[in-house]
Structure formats: structure tokens, C-alpha cells
Image (cartoon, rainbow over all chains, first blue to last red; front, side, top):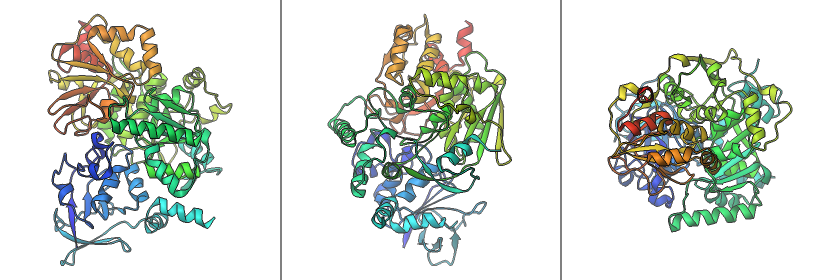
Length: 164
Length: 422
């Protein structure tokens, strides 16, 4: 069972990984993740939690730490209405699943911040715990699914180089 | 019919043509990395993969984020960077000479038709030279350095046309803030933007770089401008070799897949964007009398030679108002030297400016000059997200160098034309 972290607003890379802490180790940088908009996030988030965001998730910098801190803090999946391109690629490359809500679909109102949810990666479905309510997400293209299954770009390339 | 973006991508993936939506694997002509997202992040990955960079001549390394060195942590980052560059036998290393997006073209590395990646979100700046250049993260960059390749979904081209002529004291920066308002920070949909129209081609190459740079603020993958004689003159004067077939990349006709936005430069006023998004822009007049603490002329977006010259044209014979601090961080050493030779730095200094190193500095929230709690900044940079330039309670307004300079003189935000008629 996972907690749903729901963000209505656009989340940018500067609030995910603030510039001033970028020189610090990941563990320290992570403690400042989202502090400008949700100060309790870094201390409360748990392994397996799901983050659901609005439009243009991860807009801004190319800093990969914006996705990496979420993975480090335990987020198992990011879902958004839309993603900024670089952030989306970074998340997938790090092996962190990133899914789009189907176009023009509305998030069922039962999904609120703090809801208990279960995420099914194979079938791209987010279930609301014990309610029978679910959201079917846009499935990932096959080659991105393979990247995630390999654990991200680095293990994927290791596999490719080994095969040669 | 093919767009400039499609032509470059087709060349990079060795196909005769490509279609928007198609996924292709492209060969990379140039990979640019800096001290923050570069060696310290890619080194462990390359070691894990047991690979060196695929082509030492196609990699450019710039130190610009942790400049100046001001702590043990940042010194360690510099030392790691230098060692790695030496170990990888990379010749194209520019150490503390300015911000990567300005340094890479000024050293003649970018040419029409190239397919390039950069380890920074403002990498679309290379689009001003007719190169398809875009930002990627560190793991993806390590993959490029190991293989020389990257996958790409062929984008549609979104044309941004600016017709007419800009008025005096209205700039490329104002065009971009107005574009951000109109199409929004997600409006680029991670597709290719191409800027066309009379007002675009009238701009100097450095002003065009401001447009391509801020394609990042439109959420586009890149921000192309078709090359013309000005582009070629810039490349030649930077010591770059111009490909003989450069005119074949002079493509600026929309195709049936393209979308299209038209703007009129002749009716554009100076713009200011309110916190915390570049799309919160209005005519500068709407912010008249808004007070602020720091006037910042900085970053790849807003402190190139043309930007310093613009600020100086306003500040000549004037002083900044009491209570305002004007900070100027020239985007590159080369631009700073040119500004010194041309008397521009002297004008800025006489007006009361304080000079900062040629680095990303306050724009990225790095270093000791970052904004303090509650400080309000009027900035010539690209991005005003909450907390980006310092404390979470600081506020950043974005404007052109003219508007920043004029507002620093008045002591409140102003349309620069109000000051210049007096």
C-alpha cells in the first residue's frame, strides 16, 4: 500500500532539486526536495509512494537530480497530466516509471492527497485501495518499458555491451 | 516538403527523410557538458560501463556553474573535472571562460545542420546557428558519451513568426516573454520550435540566441532559426569552418504537419514577467512603480555583449537609484573583454554596477550572491521559478536589459521608453 502525493500545481526542477544544494550529496539534496511548496514532503514520503502531478511536470532545468531525489526518497512511480521532455527522459533513464494520464480524462475525485493506492506497472493501472476505483494510464511504448524493466539506461547499456 | 528540424534529424539518423512521431536513433555531432551535470555525474557511469568517450573531438567541456571556486566542495568538483578532461584526452575544455551556451558558439563549435546535445536545459541556444541542439540529463549524457548515439521521437515543428519591425528599446527578450504568455511554458510540447519572420532575421546573432535559449521556457526540445549571412559571418569570425552546403539548411517554410503562431513586432512593448513564471508577462507599464532590491544583468540569456551594450545605452551618464544594487555578470570572458574595449564596462561601473564572475551565478541560485529571504529582483535572465535564484521567499521579475537598467535608475519598475524620452 502506498500513499498518493497529489500536486495540483506545476512542479519545476528548482523546487525538486534546489540549486543551492546541488553541490551536496544526494542524501542531503533530497532533504530539500519540494521544501518551497510542500515542506513536510521529504520527511514524510515513504518507499513505494506514488506522486501525481499536474501539467508540465518537471519543467525547467536538465538536472537529473530532480528525478533522482524522488527515486531516492522512495517514489515508485510518477504520474502527470503532462511532462516536461527532459524530466520525462531523465526519470525513465533512471528506471523511475513515468506515466501520462490519458488525454482529456479527469482524475476521479476520490483520488485525493494522502489516498492509499496500489500501482500496477505491468498493466499501467493505479488503483484506489479498497474502493474498486482505478485510473488506466497511457501504457509506455515498448522500448521504454524495456528500459524500465532493465532498471534504467545504465543497466540497459551494460546488457547491450555484454551482448557484443 | 521538409522542415529544418526534419532535415537535420534525417541526416543524423542516415535516412533520406523522417516523419514526425517516428522514433529514430541519431549520431551526435557534438556533446557539451559543464561542471555541474558533467564529469562528476558521467564519470561513474562511464566507469561502470567500462567505456571512454566515443570521440574526443566531439566533446566540449565548460566550467561555468561552480565559478568562482568558493568552498572545498566546489574546489573538489573543479579538480575532478580537470582530471577527467585530461584522462579522457579532451582538447575542447574551456575553464572559467563564461557560460557554456555562449562559449561553445563563440569558439566556433556550432554550424548549420549539426545534431548536438548539451547537459543543460538551455542547450536549445544552439538553434540560433541552425543546429538541432537540445538538453539532456546526466545519465542520458553518459549514454551519449559511451555510444555517440541518442534516440529521438521526430518532433513536429511549431513555427513562431514575428512580422514587422521592433520599436526602439524593445528586444528579443520582450519577444520571448510575450511568446511565453501567449503559448505558455508547456506550449512547445517538447516539439521543435522554429522562429521565422522579418523581425527575427533583423536581429543580431546574439539576440537570436536569446530566442533559441528561451525555447526551453516554452517547453520545446529545441528552438531553431534558419541560417543566413549573419549566422555565417558570426561563425567565420569565431574561427569556425562553415560547411559548403550551409544554404541547404536555409529552410523556413511551414509544412502540413506544422503549427503556426504569428506575432507583430511593431506593436510589441517592453515586457515584464511577474513571479514565479516567465508566462506571467505583461506590458512593463502594468508593473510601473513596483519596487525591487536587486537589478541583475546576468546569465546566458541576458548578459551577452549585446545585452551589456543595451544596458549601457540606458545607463550612460546616469546613476542607479539609492536602495537598488545593480549586479552585472557578463556571460563570457570574451564578451566582457569586448565590452571593456568598447567603454561599456566603464559606463556600467560609473552608473554604480557591481561586477560578478562570468558564470551562471545568481540565475541558478549558486554562490554567495544568491537572493536573500524576501529580496525582490528584476532580472535579465530566463527563469523566475520560486526559490530558483535564492531563498524560497525571494521574488524574481524578468525583463530585458534595457528595462532592468532603466528601472534601476528610476528605482521602480518602468518601461525604459519613459526614462529615455526625458
